[in-house]
Image (tube, rainbow, N blue to C red; front, side, top):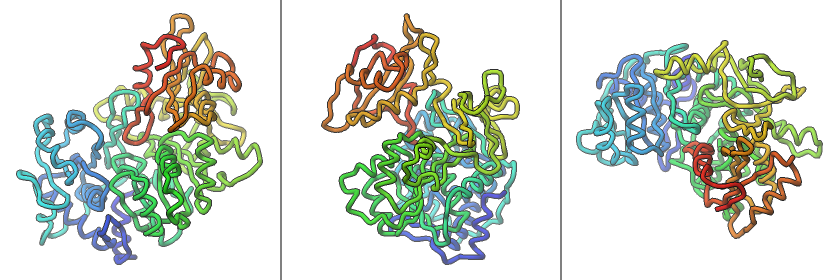
Length: 520
């Protein structure tokens, strides 16, 4: 359970196999291992010791991957910084976990002065990018020339490997502590749900500061696959990359998948090499899933459900459950998050902490070797979240009689109106049946009469129009009256985190001032 072990194995078994493709740069596994060992030596020379945190701030690249493994090789802990944060938010995350070293690329070199000014912990910045390094910053490429490699520190098992800051979908981010064993076992268990042949080529565009992307990367390196890296999500670049490299696999969040399929040039590229499309990090609506299955018939779709605290997944819905079928039970199963992966124990419990029978909704909890060590510097929150030996996810769900898990809502997003529970995901699925609606978010808003009222924020498809009365009438055709929106607003876009997750607390905050029935 040592995260650097796959590099040692690849160095022996396939040193000449292409490991990373980054634009015009192709790096073999042997070269990657050598650069990782030399970069680790540089970090050690600059003072990094066992357990020290090293932050990474950059776009997806071969160097970013090398930096991740070099920090582990040196015995350190990676702190991948959210690239969409402001300098103040980045500085806060550095100080929160006392990070003294920062590795930055050319895209974020201009942020260095502000980070130095606003962080009281940051001591040294290393530039690992193209071109000439900025002044007062260590030039990594220059420093690697002629540098001797260091021995692998061989950190493993319960040793801390990563501090992954949550996307903050419900407020201030928390530093999730993940060990080598957490990530290693999580990766191994998730891999069991994916058919991955020898010679696999995977295109990666999800940001590597996100645990889902790092989890996918660990699967690929563990399989000695070729990883094609794109700096960020871009529809044409993804399709071009899949076609040019004959990629057999990719990982997308649902918002990415929708933008890809809806792109006007989608049909211009040969995507027939794809054998696996992994998706997760956010719920997917049935309409989009059916559209994706038709658009990419050569690919087997695999859904993962989890969160940062679970390294990162606990259930999987395999490709065998995504086959086109007229069977109603199979269609319903497509709405599930699948069954627990190996080594993950998952339960649904009531407010007293007792398991509930299949069909009944409760909080989803999990335990097993993939569960986080806790939140950095927050022992009380850690104890509360991990109480009773279970990781309390804050998600509401139910099992069916065959052991498939259905995620119905976030516990904090459940709406209680007039004493009745309303699961926002159920209302959202109904809204997305309307051909005019591209995206939606349903939240509860304080109401003097009902306690909370159901509020819908909608994004319409280009060129489409629809009124709030028609929206509410549509809901009444499919839902009980208390579940239907009492207020509707129209937006140009919904607020999303960098990982593509909907920020419902922002929707809720802007909706509080709206009286019942009003639209804007």
